[in-house]
Length: 222
Image (tube, one colour):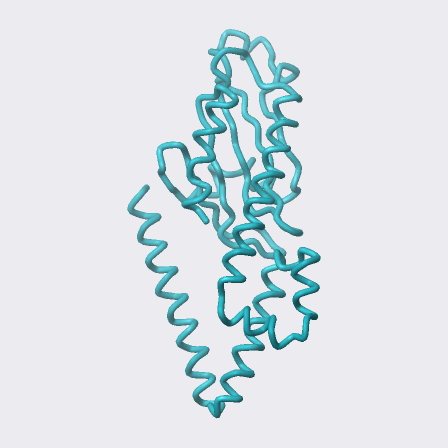
């Protein structure tokens, strides 16, 4: 997913003629606060933000509302002599299903004092297109899964209806569908409780290894 989204910040920085553009991805989005935020910039760098550095980003992820910071209406005598765009930033959410998947940040207009409301609305529209792209990629990856294909075949069309209605983007629901199919197939193949628990433990182990590798990559880019 990140490989596909990697060119986006550079393209948006050029579109808005801005000094900086960053895509912030929420690593864990639950009912509570965002656990971790990874930023991707045009230089292909990926870093994990601290709580101190990500206040505005976390606000947008929390309430799902776009922000224009340092617009013309915000400027006063103390900022009048600052360089073009040095204090101006736009942030827009990328909402996938019922959760904010990412936040796009565009900062520092090069040839004018600030971004305006039209710029913010354009960025919000781009966020909608990015969300649709993410949904399409998720659908492609999910339907490439043999386990999910099996679950769809066994559902007698019920799950297919949900996919067509777009609820395939609700990853938690699809995860449960795959898990139930996995459990049924192991039971049907004659595996007992001990073997099924062992398989679940192996999945957790693989996930832990993947998280450790990701953590090492994030630290190496700091």
